[in-house]
Structures are given as structure tokens and as C-alpha cells.
Amino acid sequence: MKKLIFILFSVCIFNAVAQSTSPRFGTTKNKDNTFRTLTNKLVSVTDVAGADSVTLSPLGYNNLINVSALDSLTFKSPTVTNCYLGDELTMVIVGTSGDKIKFTGTNWVSAGTATLSSGLNAVIRFVFNGTKWVEASRVVQ
Image (cartoon, rainbow, N blue to C red; front, side, top):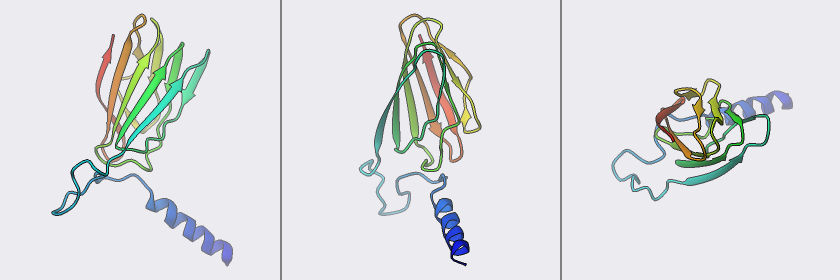
């Protein structure tokens, strides 16, 4: 019986932290919509030789991902359990000519593989629509 109660409790807790279709800020009268409570997160990803993959877990309103690409790097389907409508994810990618950044999985809506030019940057921006990260813009130089 204790195991059954524990399992039911665990299921309720995990369902309580699922992704949200409402924004992180309040939208009703007298609720905070001044950006005071919104958080910024910085994550650095370094690619090593060979085919690598990374799974992101965005936790803030503004997520900045700093990527050093070496050859090819695949971003797997990100975790969306702590994401809210309107959250932003910006990738600043540095690499050499021919380096490839790929997006796989069901939680991305992207234009596909980004191939870098020689020694310049790529900036790819995503916005969370309540269920998936949707690519909003891409600049590859």
C-alpha cells in the first residue's frame, strides 16, 4: 500500500512541473509584468572531436547558449518541463568553415542544419510556444 501511495504522489508531482502555456509573468491586473521576476541563464557547450550530442534543459526566461563548435554537434530534443510560453533561447555559435549544428527530436521546430562559414559566428534564436521551441531567426556568417 505504501508503494502505491508513493507512486501516486510521484505522478502528481511530475505532472505539476510540466511545460506551461502561460508566460512566466502575470497577465492579470496587479500582477508583475515588469521583467523583475524573469531570470537569465547562461550555458556553455564545447564540442570535442567526433560526432557529439547535447540535450539542453532551459530553466529561465532568457537562455543564452554559448557554443564552441569543432566539427559537428547535434542538439537533441530539449527538456521542456520548466519552460513557459514566450521563453527565449539564443545560441551564439563559434566555429570554422564547414562545422555543422543539427537539431533533432520532437521539441524543436527549426529550419534544419546550420553550416558555419570560416571563423565567424552563427546566432540562432528560438521562442517557446507552450509546447515546442520554435526557431525565430537565424544568422549564419
